[in-house]
Length: 384
Image: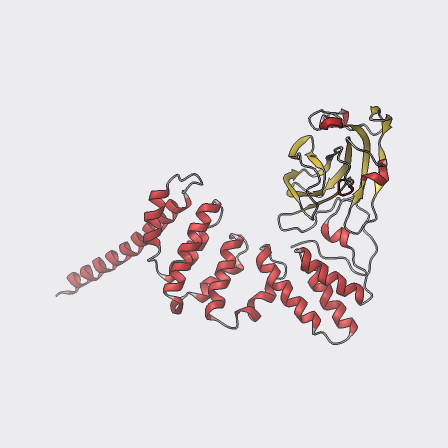
């Protein structure tokens, strides 16, 4: 074979090989797209099923691409992709691309569930993964990964020698904690050590409100009736109320969990409606969670837009019981709550109160820029 023919032959083989690689990538991409297109009502189910079978035979090297397909996918598609990734990883656990999976984990732009799965794959084949990787995730935007990192930080704090070292360690864990049980553990330990903990700031509880009531809710007729504050909050206005003329009152709670007791502000009333208003000064435009705990029927408005309505009474109360998602605009934002009390007379039905906080999607406090921060020995870090 002369040199020209040999070069032609080798070039053809290389071209065919390259074409094969691109074809495989294109096929992978096409199948991932079919899985991502599956609808929650069964749309595209047959096509996704066939694609999933093909993807289950993928190479371990394709795991980062499969995990990346979880970014922005719906819950059903995300579950399919998770199952596919687990199948590929289990079949060829000894060939996992550990370095690439660690790079994927480090890229916080990816889906939190996908990144968590990448970590689990690495940890399954590398016993050093927990001690190497988890401590680096203390301020991670993935709540699951952050929880593991806080757990390690709490364990380290428990082993700290000396009061000062323990304070520093528990402060570190507290600042990063977003789950209530871990926050409580860290704050309790800090209090035992004589430290001051600012829970309202850490959670982002709104402590000061303008409150008006009671309006009439006998027969629960006040739930659907739009009293004047729903149209406009005028803090100097007076209105006819359930038992006479009423006006706005400023109230600041001192409860460390931000609980506002309306019976202390307005007295005890049955069949009543109260409104709570506050201006929230945002540093920038941003998406936020408005999280409410309330044993009474309630509504939340942000800048005049009703975000959620929960017409239930006395079903218990717990942190972050109701979640509304909204968008703050830079500057002043108006938050309005409607809290309705019914006419039940049982002792357990007397509560008329609420707890409200503003935070991001993993519970990191978002604070109004005019909030007077308490002068404490320790203030938590509020950025991720």
